[in-house]
Structures are given as C-alpha cells and as structure tokens.
Amino acid sequence: MLLNIYKRFPVTFVKGKGSYLYDNHDKAYLDFASGIGVNAIGHAHPAWVDSVSKQAGKLAHVSNLYHTEPAEALAKKLVEISGLSGVFFANSGAEANEGLIKVARKYSQDKYGKGRHKIVTLEQSFHGRTIATLSATGQEKFHQHFHPFAEGFVHVPANDIQAMMDLDDGVCAVLLEAVQGEGGVLPLDISYVQAVAKLCEARDWLLLFDEVQTGIGRTGKWFGFQHFDVLPDAISFAKGIGSGLPLGGFIVGESCKDVLGFGDHGTTFGGNPIACAGALTVLEVVEALLPEIEAKSAYVRDSLQQVKGLSQVRGMGLMMGAVVDEQLGSVGEVVQALLEKGLVILSAGNDVLRLLPPLTISTQEIETGLALIKEVCEGRRV
Image 1 (cartoon, rainbow, N blue to C red):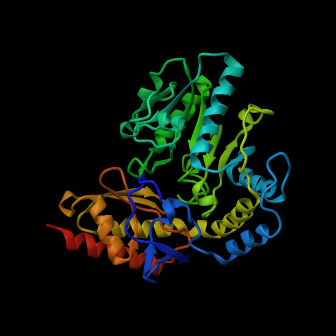
Image 2: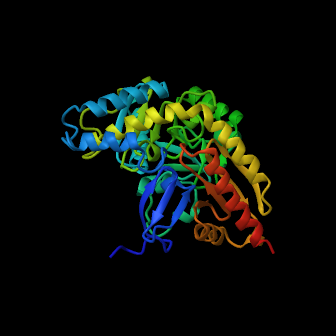
Image 3: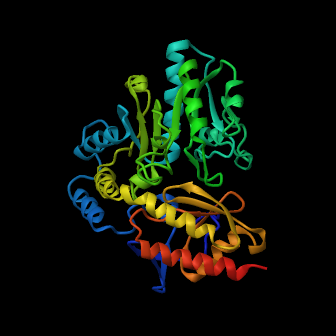
C-alpha cells in the first residue's frame, strides 16, 4: 500500500500517446500537465521509445566510476545550448539544486574562508523537498514539521532590488527561478534580473538559476535565464529532459568549473545511460519545436484572457497560469471538474490554474483543451 502523502485523484492511468492519457476504463484525457512539466515531448514519443529501448538492450548502469557514451554526448549538448562549461548529472530537481548549493558554498569558502555562506532566494520560490532545498524555498507553508531546517538561507521579495542590495557580506550566491512555477506562475521582471546580475558581479556572489521547471524549452528558449540577457554562474535542470525517466543535474560556467573536485560530490544513478540516451532524443525533438512555442503561448494567453472567471494570465512559453475567481469555487474544484471533462491540468499556489502541456501539443489539441476550460469556468460562475 502507498503512504497517504499524495491526495490522489480517483483516476488510474494505464497508457499515454502524444498529448493524451488513457485510464483503466479506456477513457481519454487531454494532458495539460505533462506530469508537472516532465513529459515535454508527450507520451510514448516513438523516437524516445526507440532510444531508451535500444540503450536498455545495451547497457543500463555501470556507475560514475566509468565513462558512458550517452552521458558524454548529453553533457556536450547541454554545454552547447546553455553557453556554460561543465555538467554534473543527478536524478531529480531537488538533487540538482542541492548541487548548486554545494557549488556556491565551496566557491566562497575556497576564495574567502568560512562565514560567507548565505544563499538568497525569493519569496514564493520553490526549490525542492530535501531539508536544504526546503530551507531555500521561500514559502512559509513548506517550513513546517521538519525542524530544525538548514540555516544560511535568506528570502527577499521578488522584483525588489533594494531588498537584495541591503543584504550583508555573508552572502555567497543568489538563486532565482525565471518563472516561479509552484509559487503561482510568476515571471521575474527583466530589469530586476539584470540588476541582480550586476549586483552579483560587483559583490562576487554567484548567480544561480533553478531551471528545473523552466528548462529544456518550456519557456520558448532552452532555459529561462536566456530571456533576460544574462549568463549565470550555474544552473540546475531536471523534469523535461528525462521525459519520464529520472534525470537532472547542474551546469556550471567557467567561474565554477573547478570548484568541485574528486570526492566533493557524488551520485549512484546520476547520468544513467538509458535516461541519457532518451534525453538526447528529447533535445533533438525540442530543438525543432522551439520556433513555434511562442506562437502557441500567445494563443493560449489570448484565449485564457477571454474566459470569464479567469484573470491575471501570465507565464512564459508553454508555462502559463491564470487566477481563478472565487466565484468559481476553489482552484482544486476547478481542476477536479476539468478532470471529469477529460482535461488533466494543474494548480499553483492557492488560486492559480496552471498549464504545462507537452511542447509537442498541436494547435488543434490546444483549442480542444481551452474550449474545455472555457466550458467549465463559465459554467461554474455564480
């Protein structure tokens, strides 16, 4: 029996194809959630299935004491698309962000000694479920039950550069999300991000980006930071790159390339050959989709703005959110009603309907999903 940690919907999915999921009664559901941004190229993409199947028949695991061709090829591609210098593979977003924390603190300790270890994150941020990444998360609702939390994290309001400038010399890094997904699908202002980048450069704080949800084409560029004309010192990634298999990690720039040495970090399963082989196919598919994501995004935004009961439509690329009017009931009730109509969708924060469809989704499928949102929302108005 599974522990009651998730409040699961009363649906059992047994298969998926493209933008659709199918339950154990063979009912079809259009997927606007992508497994919380994971299934970037949809379900059972033929090229991805072929890649992971072939690799499973060749080599599944050897540990990171040895080289493998899929991991080496994937690292090379990630360096190319990010403009950074070196990759470490892990299994999840939380592990990836733990890696960023370790890089930042060792960078500062190597250069300045102990005591300069604080990492600044933003209010409404979310960085993971481990003790350290929960401590980094800037939402009070997550700071329950598991005390003591890790010290050395500071949370400041988003888009408030003065709050960042007022911090003391104990800081070693700033960790940002281009769009705060779990916090309510809240994009950062470009002027703010650029000001933070200049501040980090002036004070020798590392500029870090959590790209777990925003990376791998989700926002219309390979990574969210690329919308702001800045180059971070390091970024994390996960979710969409594995397209269903556990894969994550971090990418560092030249400033951090030699910070972690032999024995400073490790993982048993990170860089698994099957996951990396699949990820190489994900990148090939997404690369062809990037030019059309912004047009799809604009269509979604314009359509949601016309739905009565939804407001404050926001996001980047195919990472969109809209505030649900209290007249429609709770956002959870709206999500449940849409599920009953055959649309899988997410919430964020307390009142935001969140859309993370596969990047492969067709315009016709988008229209179908948006029509269901309009039907349910406008049918629930008091």
